[in-house]
Amino acid sequence: MEEFLKSLMFEYHQYAYIVLFIWCILEGELGLIFAGIMCHAGLMSIVPAILVGGAGAFVGDQFYFYIGRYNKRFILKFFEKQKRKFAVAHLMLNNYGAIIIFLQRYMYGFRIIIPMSIGLTRYDSKKYAFFNLISGYIWAGSAIVISWYFGEEIWEFVGWAEKHWYLAIPIVLAFIGLIFYGTKSIENRILNQRKERKKSAISNIKSKFRRNQS
Image (tube, rainbow, N blue to C red; front, side):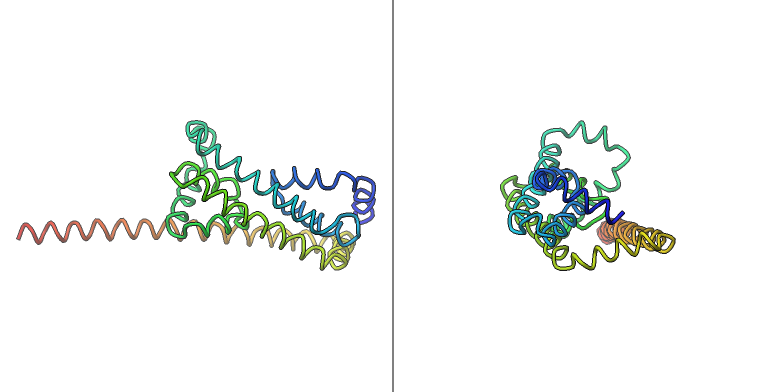
């Protein structure tokens, strides 16, 4: 696997910036890691890679934002099974404001949902674009720089994983499971907080009504 990836990188490195841009529009993390490794190997330049990766991240989230802004019916129909996530995204926007634009890039299952959810609200499009641009470059820059700095160690891990796949697979699955569990825990906590606030509001209304009656 290690030799295959290296030969692929060397053979097609002239298309690396184009691939990175498209990859970051669609998803990004793995593409940024590969870009960092290619910078480590001297096949890409780190500054242009960050600029291209950040631009792709910005364009991708702007696209999802405007889908939410101008295609509400499509979202309600196509993402009908994701109503829970949209509710959580809306609550996070209300609770945390612009910071959620930065955090959503690191939240499993919310990368597309949050930009669309913000687009569904009256959130100012220029303000979103400004924070999204900064967020995209922080995300791309941190991922590429870390991968560039630890390029040799990443290759060593790939080689180790290839030889000890019976250990690597459970580790990767455990890591994915941990991310999934953490995301679900956040969802449940936010929804439970909303339920508690509703109960508290109803209780206060009932108390005021009883006092007025007496």
